[in-house]
Image (cartoon, rainbow, N blue to C red; front, top):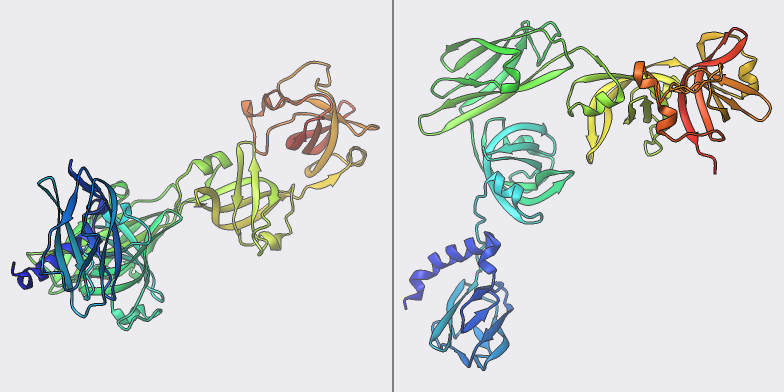
Length: 517
């Protein structure tokens, strides 16, 4: 056997095995002899690796002088049953390999042994393979730079057409951090990187990657122009904009995503040398904020190149209930919610976060600008505007702005409420024990007309609704659906009115209730 000629090829094969799928180290089975793994890798600085062997009768390792000088196998023979055999080698200055044959009842079980002193090159995996692969493993990937999120640390998106992987941290040519710009990576470049995989909040990442190679794209979006001014945001009423491009390839094609074709169209492409202008027309936007990513492609006849640009359009602010907000997708669209401040969010040390609740549900408003300065408190009726976001699959309003306090609610006793002047502009929070679930005419009802008492004073509640904003049938059945009974404690928000001499708490929003023990 001319081992010196097959070692390079064998090293390449075995290196691929140990960096590829785990199925290559699965137990190998013959009827007469079985081993727990058929490939063994010994470190360059020496070591021992154990393999479990099960034989139906006596067995032996076939002697081979080609590897006996560097590899020790113990034991070299045995009887039927289970045996642990070890493969040991001292430190090596050059790579070694061996094909060890174990004989039993005329059958041969082969075990490949490798000792590499050179670093085995990691094979290129597709982004889809990386997404499906294990965390902690080092991968090499090659794809287009789709978008750059951070130019200090080098956070960007790599897309090879099978999936997208987030690159979190890019090392420069000397292995240093925070020097991404020195690499010159631009959107559209084809980049080969290597780094360990991790998954953070559902996002697959390669972290602190080493850049192996950069292939500069033949096409680059230099700028977007809206009404003759550089920018990437269109007005609500829509209009024309253009993409100015440098193209060193053959021709230009433009991809408009399917979900944007209803409001965005291409009106023309003009080229002069390596300079090109692609013109677009956007329709007026009657909904919330929207955006899309346009892809510009070219080719050199052998390979395709691309570059992307994201255009946004302002939108109307959508007024909605909490339930409608929670049903909306995560994205840049703006929503307006009016409801009661149900509670503060103590984890936000900035004091800008709170829970808002209406008749349809409750959600967290995370860091709404202006909330703390407004002086709004628990129980107040407020309006806030923001985007539908999520943290670890928990929905919340993000990038929000506290718009205003609709009604500053004052907490009072029943006795104090009875003494207040009638006013639809002044709201109060009142707590009492339910003394009757019948309306003022003594009849049962679906709207929650009832009486509460503090033991001395009694107050008529004209409607106990499930939350702020309830209308029509949404006002019905709150009492029955929550099993509320006489004797339960009820906290209501409403204004004072008087009807035929009877003082009433009107516009009654249930803030909370507590069943009697």
